[in-house]
Image (cartoon, rainbow, N blue to C red; front, side, top):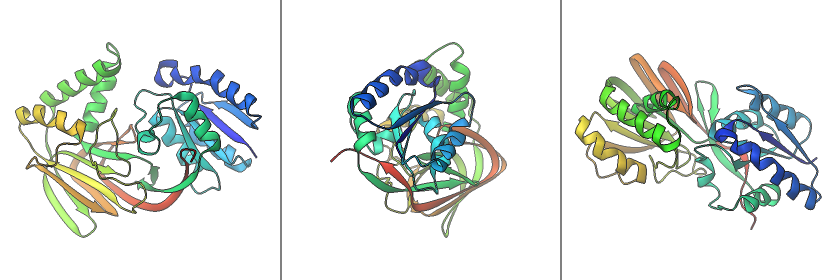
Length: 292
């Protein structure tokens, strides 16, 4: 059967919805068998994607941000369908790992005709994630950025959220188990990366590879507030490897635990827990990439 496009109409403050006429024009011009469905509530992307797999759609395309992609992916995984992504959100981080194309019409054509490759997935407390899961300070930045969006928008909301977090963040002592390696320290941040980019283009683990069967883990110990201000510009660019409090590891299974609840950012969605478990699932998802 054909192609199912799942649109999050509120993603990117309406950006995703504005892509719909372009999708329709290209599909009609190319005589493509397609259907467009819209999400109307949180988590509905998963339900719509499952419906698509059950009704024989070979390609299921997420049109929205990384949160929409996570929902759609959780409905596609384990099926015969391949997932694609057309960026229509505010962050759009995952697509940077699979397609460097900037032209929207070309991205749509890639999703219609592009090659299909198999990539790894992460699994966190029973739910799949496609890109990056992280705990500690950056998850609290996410909380504070959401609050800042009541007044500010875009990068300004993130900047306000970041500054607020730097001055209010309270370090928690955590245990991190990476396969057979055990770490225990006060945590600034840990990122468990399948893809390379998150948080609007930050590079927590520049060597992350979607097809190598491993997570790339960045663990940052407690740093002073002053050093934190210097660290984040380097973290954003992926230039933080020489900072002495920063450590990189590879692993297939990661456990993060604390006596206090830890804020965890999973593909842009927030979770609070005292124990978080991450597992890599090799070659678990069929993903549409560029036309060759």
